[in-house]
Length: 250
Image (cartoon, rainbow, N blue to C red; front, side, top):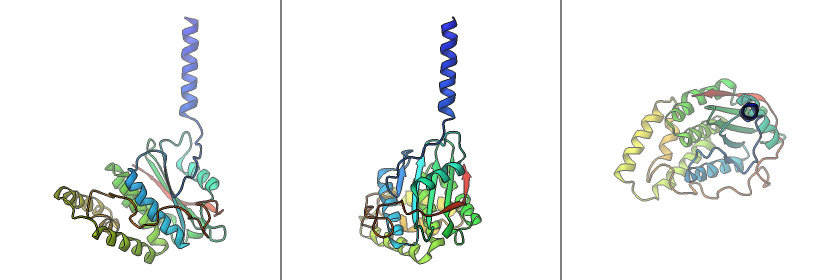
């Protein structure tokens, strides 16, 4: 009986330690770090291509991280931990951006580097999350929410860059086979979902077209590799962050 009670107490303690463990920053693998396994592989390739183009422009270095849990930390604390370790952005420009999403906590955050706080103030980051990303997350479409967030962040940094990425994506889609009726119906439904958010519709249209959502890789070509500012690896630039950005939940 005593042994059983001790075993029960040990189990409770171990469970408590596991449930309230500190958040550990995962390894930076590239522009898209889907540790929660919520982004389909083909969508992940598309996102990698988009983020690589943004990175190569020198305007910003944007990375996405999805995790299952934040442990006992707030998403704000976890986000700062990530950018401190990954060192996103250029040291002189402080132009790193992190989109962090936790599936079990149902939280998302846009962490903005100091050099971009003027073009992406907290209120703008909050609007991107609440009006555009969260409605898609609630519907279970994590990949589309991340696409929309990426586009709107980029649009605030450099609208011409954002539109050129969208145009490139449109040209690519036109070269693909004609969509089936089922895909067409899906596209219409997706547009209506995005239209429910204030500005997401401008991003949704270029990413729809032939095939089921985000089918195939290499939408922009030149996938990830040799990124970073000045041709180095991704991350490690030493950009500064001071807690700018916004968070939201669904």
